[in-house]
Length: 205
Image 1 (cartoon, rainbow, N blue to C red):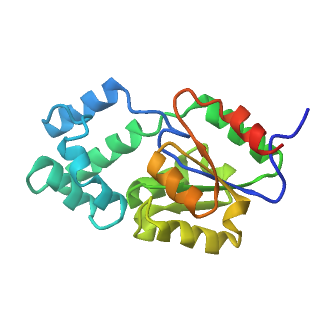
Image 2 (cartoon, rainbow, N blue to C red):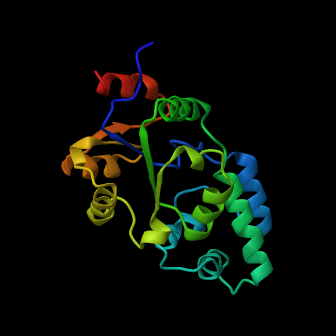
């Protein structure tokens, strides 16, 4: 069988909507039940209003959830909301997991770059089944920068010790893909219909 990976390149994966799937309606229902709010999944809800600042590490969990609820939140409630939030983004895409398993088995160099709050990233790094596939994990909440800011890509490139052309970047956000492509990365835009194995195999020929 022809190997999927191309020797010498780094494979840089996003997490949300690439490795993970979207939260289910039940996930959102549980979070809404805990907050007393409705329609949190909608893009204009309080959940999303300050999410980028939370992802960038500019808000603590207490500050973020306080903004969502519109009032100070006791520590035990913050812990509950953090656990529910981590749980709803933990559902994995089996097709992506199969690709990661193949690449890892072939000895490919794997890294991850995700916009994710610090607490969630540390929880996943310690507990998730996918983290061991990666030799490098980069999270916005720990870096103080979010995609598509070119500076976060520059820091990843420098840390990997690779040229952008030697990095294959997989992400679901067209803005992130556009920035990476402009910087010289090889890119794959991941959507619900993407055959990731075929896309990567096409790049590797």
